[in-house]
Length: 242
Image (cartoon, rainbow, N blue to C red; front, top):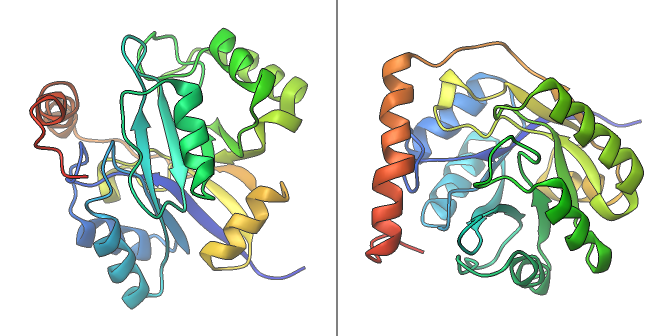
């Protein structure tokens, strides 16, 4: 068996609702000993090139991606890895999955089964999706709010439908760099982005719990303002760079 590495494949920057610049994100990942991250800002790839370039200079593998917001009212999130160009938001869940796969990119279901209607794919919705479409991975270990009962439901659902849900991964959904990066991770064989992709497709990656850290309350408040007020306004007014 070759070298195994640690990835945090769901990270955000100030290009969307994150609180760190591309430089700060890369510096945090390197300082924590991660070998790979995925840049996955909401509905934009504006920071992807800079994160990739800075990562390359620092010896950090970077996957270019996006967290896509699907149509109202649920506005379920879909994580896309290895994109060449942005995916338009505000389309149906099925359309979004197809659009990602049309690029040869990978579809990931992020933070599923949260006890909220917004953003998180719910059991019935996911069941309908995988009746005629498969996805490539699902965040079986994530840091979004979820009850113990919902977590048990998620694990049972994955065991029942693993062939349609792809690899089980872990990620921190980082918005704060050093404050929250590495709280949940994915272990994979190799060191490169292509090694990671192969591990996902072959189901050899493993979700791992990470470090226990807390985000300062004032930073949480600032980020929630960016996420719930500033980002939607930028999206609605066409100010969110693709």
